[in-house]
Image (cartoon, rainbow, N blue to C red):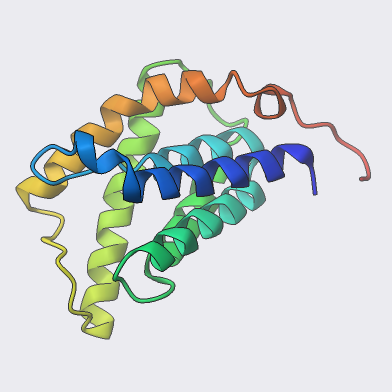
Length: 169
């Protein structure tokens, strides 16, 4: 396992912890930005699908342990988002503003749709207001606006900034 994967997983878990405890103070209408999702999208885009899956699962399972949602609820959506976002690795030029907004916008929409699907299939009783609600629109805007500065800060972490080396490890 590479050092970048370990760093990124620790960062994703750290932001999941931060998001569930400390970021409640900057909530708008009770909506907290999903910084763990932003970290997972950055990691997947930078390091590939496996890194995205691993970071997504670690951040998601941490959120599951810290919330009232069933175990695996957040882990499922963040793992799938990490895998799909990892497919964009080396396929797109990483524009410092537009692409992070677009990637996180799509990831947040996907997370909302997956949450709605899980709630419908398993008949889970949660306080999720749905993808077409005002709260979800706030979360969508919040995550999208925080994406460029978060990507810029994550690029400063040395193991995440290094290009992947080929060969056998």
